[in-house]
View (tube, rainbow, N blue to C red):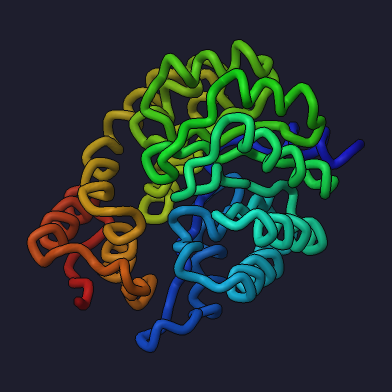
Length: 308
């Protein structure tokens, strides 16, 4: 079986986009990263991603991103699929990181639409085709227009899927659900479509999506995974209940820029030292209090506080 066929079969459900933990001095905390990955797998997450949006990739050097990916590969040890984020605003960095992911044995690479420079659709096609042609590893396009400033249009994605056999799916962090429907219509019903919008994780499944890559899985991995399990088992009522049950948590984790609220929550849970690299920072004290109250509502937390 080819790598592409394997990835099509293996990539499903809740792929947790694990945060990058730092020590107080803002250096990488690789021991904690391993612990987080083990906790994710033990909690039922169906796959692991690192150095995507939740992993603060723009705050990491290329070498640090490779270290995080290598640490993750070793921690996962083949227990679940691994699909790290390898995209960058810089084309050559994207090539290097995607090749590194292939050499490390990742199951797929998640490549973000380049941010800040807002390339045209023609330029996006050339960027992604060059990356896809340079590797054998399956590629998941990461379309998040709210962070990148440009939306990959359905026609561009469909053209890439037609021309690049190893482009097998997309993470759509796109609030335009009509767009998402048209992705499957034009890219094929076997296209691996993952939701990156928390409130669309359940709706995405109902139209034929493959799962989610949701920041909320950093805080409540078991319930996020259970939603997908319930759907696959045909228990749509339980899946829908979980969709609404998770909504309050989803909302509070996005009242500040991701991953600041998630890191604050994980600090309260004693999972990490809650540190972000500048220009990012922890949420305001008022929002931290709100996060703490929500964690208590979910019985995730009895008491605790994230340091500022």
